[in-house]
Amino acid sequence: MKRQVKNVYLESLGCARNLVDSELMLGKLSDAGYNIVADPAKARTIVINTCSFIESATSESIDTILELAKYKRNGKCRRIIVTGCLPERFRNKIIKTLPEVDFFLGTGAYGKIVQAVDGIPIASGVLLPDPCQNILNYSAEPRVKTVPYSAYLKIAEGCSRRCTYCIIPMLRGKQRSREIKDVVSEAKALIKSGVKELILVAQDTTSYGKDSACSSSLAILIERISNLSGNIWIRVLYGHPESIDADTINAISDSKNVCSYFDIPIQHASHNILKRMGRNYNQTQLLKLFDKIRSKDPDAVLRTTVITGFPGETDKDFAELLSFIEKVKFDHLGAFVYSDSKDIASHKLSDKVRKNVAKKRYDAIMSCQMEISSQNNRRHIGKVFDVLVEECPEEKLYIGRTKYQAPDVDGITYMSGEMKTGSFVRIKITDALEYDLIGEPV
Image (cartoon, rainbow, N blue to C red; front, side, top):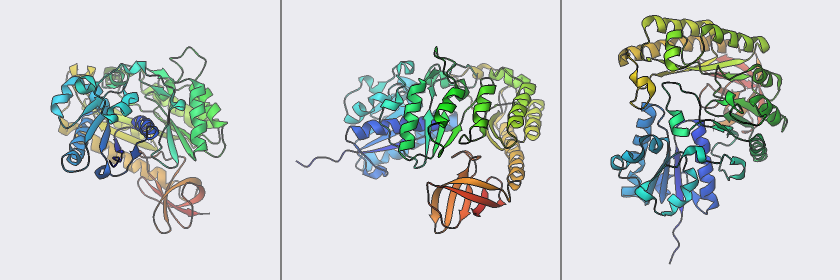
């Protein structure tokens, strides 16, 4: 009897932290003898690692499941498994709404992926163990990288804050920082595998170590990883205004191979809205923080995210936010329209903002930021930067990023000439677009 090819396809949705979970699941499956394929049409099992952070993410997850389910009806697929935040959020009631799915694994059940793909029965079809019981020993786990030259290094899991708009503590549990030895060990392995950029991530990355009884901190961790190799970049994403401290700012600014890139989501600038959001700071404190960073390193890049249309956001509140954005002139900024749901605390707040009003405010923010980004980028013309070359979409045209551009969320740098992907190249910026740069080797 001919042995069936054990092909598995995995679709990873959502944030970088979710991508780490996906790569760890792929590692387990590969170790178990499964063949990872890039084409769902060739797979006997399809895994969708989902996001449900906001309404649009939930919709994308469901649409993706339904789209990939066609391979079960008309193709080689015999089993569909849904993992991550969607089953964790909607739990057992999800079974009836998605009969196409064979097994659901919550955020605490990634370790059972091989069992699910093997087809070993799972009681009720949904496995939802407490995510806080997961052992965060990632360095001992096999991992299949899906991005050639960059790797996300998850240094903690969960979140202990209680922002009223956020579902993460319910989906991921309280914050648990990984042991520093384990993180450094994984960093070593990733560097050895050829990674040129390590990106430290968590839900609240700058709170790393503050939940732990040991003496670890983000500043110490950055220093330890920085000392592993002078030929890589280290980047920190998902900081928090309340947890970033002077030691962390210094560690990022003082290390040559650490990108002077500060990703600090503020969510809003109005005291009224920040209080309703459960964010315990104000404009004055934010300005002091950004001034401290720029005083330490005038070339430091500031990135943030904001939410508009939050319950109770008046025209005055929105004007404060827009004025703050214009004052700080963030190098990069992402915006979201508030996403309501019955299972988050902010759902109970009064004075909901109409969707059309929230959308107009969102458009105003992005229009403002486009002009700021364009002005910031034009200042780079004539400068020379190291660029990590990542793609060659056509002959003599390359795409890469400077230290000041994070993958997926910021602009990119276009380059002409001859160069090697996966290498660092000195590039002189010759032109600038609203979000992207254009340059040539020097």
